[in-house]
Image (spheres, rainbow, N blue to C red):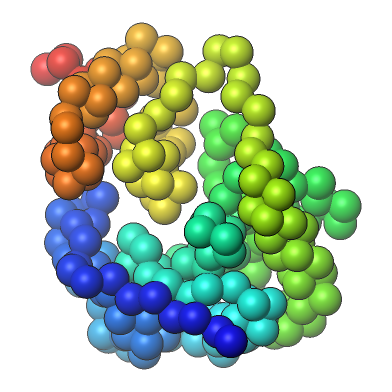
Length: 225
């Protein structure tokens, strides 16, 4: 049976600090709540409405648990994030978590940005593409589910800085932030990790990320002015 999990409280947007939607149906009828185009005809979700509905159907029919995270439909399996749906002005997309594990036999995965470590998204520029690619999308979701069922995670690279969960999730949900963070020197990246790890509560780490966003986009470390 399909499970749908809703959030209890509106979460702050990494970009503006505004409340994002927590009701899954609102995303498909109004948008994510991240900007002033929310609940208007100009919202990106309106442009890609039929394609987004197809993606939702495919994810649900694949047996994934549907929830709302970061103002977007997020699909889980065995307690692990599998994929998240997003819409921009120029495209809509299905992005995979733990992208380093994905084999990508069809060579359809693309990087969110130049400095994104691994290709992690299927990008659609026409509404009809989601339904046309249904068989391939299902196979990729099945592969990702298999890793979750087996408890397999991507091996950590030797030089990789271990990020707090809240920061990892923020980067996965915000391509612009991820692009800027990966451009930082290892020392600057580490400054944010140290600062966030010093907070005992998850909500404190989350609020700090919201405040740090503009600093990261400017290429600065946590303590730089």
